[in-house]
Image (cartoon, rainbow, N blue to C red):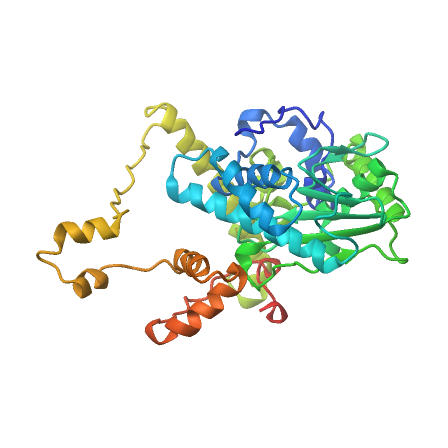
Amino acid sequence: MGFLAKPADERRGKPSSSGMERYSLCLGSFQLEQKTPAELRLGSSQYSLHGTKVAELVERLLNAKPTCASEHDRNFADVEAAVIEPDTTLRQQVVDDAMEMVRKTFSVVNEIGAFDPFDNGTLYLCENRLWSYDGSYSGKPDVLVVNSLSKTLIVIDHKSGWIKVPDAQNNHQIRANIALAVDKLNAATWTCIGAVIQPNLGKVGCNNHAWSTTTKETPSDLVNQYRLLASEVVDPANASNLKWSEKACRYCPARPNCDVVKNLFADVATLKMKPSNYQEALELCAVCKMVISDYESGAKAALEKDPTCVPGWALKPGNTVTKITKPALAFDAVKHAVSPSEFMACCTVALGKLTDAFAKGTGIKKSIARDELMSRIEPFTETKQNQPSLKPADLVPSQTEE
């Protein structure tokens, strides 16, 4: 788990804020998860593991207690070596994502304007598990920013992936974590703010704008709402209250053990192919694909341990990919036979890395370096848009977010 490993049983068998959206859609999912053997539960994807590494580095960076942005940049070199990732490309992605998360965290706090993000009285609490006052559920905000002088707390959710998440006001995880922070700090009269930071979406769906509790929905309202939901999901009467949907099943660790989901295959088979059935069919197919993927992932993991455990099936070796990691030295090795223009014609420029180098070379902020760079090289670029893909509507950015 990296250099900030946490005990596996820290949730104590209780509901967690990270599952609140799923619980609200399927009250029985928590109890089904508790009954599902560990070997059948969905494991962590490569994307969630990447997010964990980013979160660990963000925690190190924010705990360095910088007093200004420039000091933070100097501290960064001291902690980035802690990233445990043998693949240099993936390691650099972890470093880049963590740095961007921290910069945007400071930016969000500064934009809110309730207090100075670098003030001595401003605390950044990262990945601290909080418990409700009645012990009914817990959660770990990615970042909880606290300033007692201004009586303000900010819960920030960092998302390093590309799948759009609900904005702060409609984000059950953030709302539940605000409730936990209110319980922890006895902050029912404070200003409580939630924000989502998702840098990989760029300007699309990067919910940097904050949402604050109001007179219509007070911090105490959130506390009561999620204590009630936590009590409902552990109520034995709701054990069989299983309701499938693409959104409810998307991240459910008990999905491979859910009979309700498995029975959906028969429903797909009975649907007639006509436009009026598309909505129902797509919803059914989306969940069925998840189950198929679960079986394939499980079989692959089993075959990796024992190549003979699944009769009639084997793992096909992946393609071998060779890439030039040091193009300048590679050109020196072949320049007697290949001209510079011929060599460059064989190369593909990574715009992300070029943007970083351009920002460093010009001394301008990374946030504006991309636009400045593109204004200079646009005549030499070509932009193509891939064919649209079919996705649930909540995963597609709206036109107003573009």
